[in-house]
Length: 157
Length: 161
Image 1 (tube, one colour):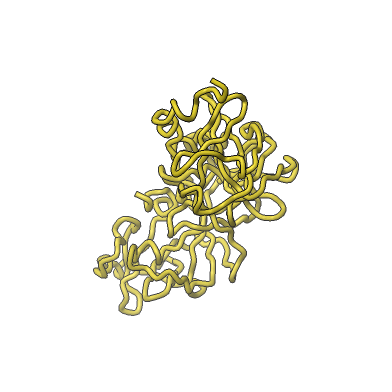
Image 2 (image 1 turned 90 degrees about the vertical axis):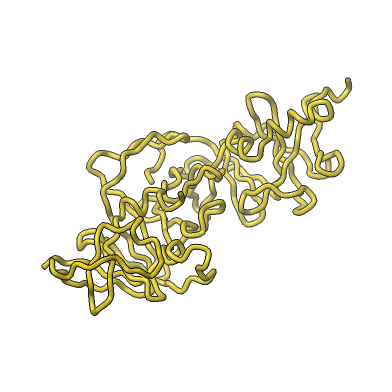
């Protein structure tokens, strides 16, 4: 419940009614939602010479089918092992001077939630997470591992 | 006799907290919805520079049978001894040793101050609700059993298990 002392720039991903905050350096690039390729459950974005998996979540941060909630932006989030795309409606950067990050109170936390904190800013709050936490809950690594041949191969190979 | 605050969560669900635990009462405050959290713990209140968890104990007590509609319009803010903090994965610092922790509960009515005598002690209500998980003891008030709840447990995350 205590404010966090260090300061970061945050990128705010608008996903329906939810505002999801990630540290700005975790958002590597923004791609157009229209550039998401693939068919059925196998969707990807080609960038940095490779293809990376793309996922969609709803306002409750639960995974949904990509065609369930069309969104116009694909934020490419950085993991140690590469990237993955997360579809959203809009992305904005919050000036650090106008934000205060609080840890999520223990009474609201659960092992199944991506939310790690609450970021207060002048227009309200955003829920704070990390690319690694989202990837863990959305099973991005498993998703990639089963489709490496199709998705993580170099585009021009 | 010991003073206490009688809390009414609505629907006949009542409990009590210690006299010094009640800090403030707000009427229809602006709370913020936090997605991806348990249904009884959906909101936070930004209050005095803090992010205070707001719990709907009525929803937790009734579990799956709880109404989706919350009739409570008051918010009680409570202070309690903080649990031992593990360092947060996002860099939160542990609370100072003497700092109180705060939490808020939705209430159907403003709290009522009552005086409790030792011989008011009573068993917990046998209404099928999980009072034993959050109660320190219980007393009878106007022929109704009123559990005294342990705020440290209520706001510890134990309700999510």
